[in-house]
Image (tube, rainbow, N blue to C red):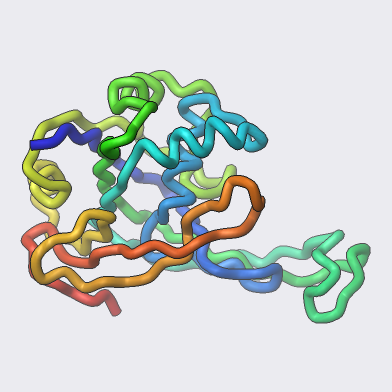
Length: 217
């Protein structure tokens, strides 16, 4: 048995970073590890330049995300000055066009649990979620919460079992915990703390809240 913190991510717009450069900023189907660590770090008051704090948090938690409602995708148009110099050969002072994707009316349920070597305890994280030091947002500052993040704390045999106790949804689950019959995916969303804006890969196990694998369209 393990202890789990359950979060609800709900808002009119959400944006979860996917591999990109400057021109197109796509949104992933679910909040990845980097996004969820950033969300917890904001609540805990860990600054962007606090590499030790970020590493401590990253080494302390695992995640599982259930997509309760995917929502509808929208694309927003921007122009950006001072784009990176190697984008289509433009110099850093040029203006470029960009397109940013968002999910509208998406709902996610997230299970968080401690690793075996955790130094940032689930109790500390839970307290921070209830009383955040910095304002949490759903991927971008333009994406506010529609409800508090905290949903529940509970004990269960697995992340899937913990998620199954919340609501009646049968959505796709992306978990860092292996389960029978799950499909293995590789996601490049692990932040490299000593190399800003650089990411490593991890294995994510795709299944449903009832353990039946399903690949989203």
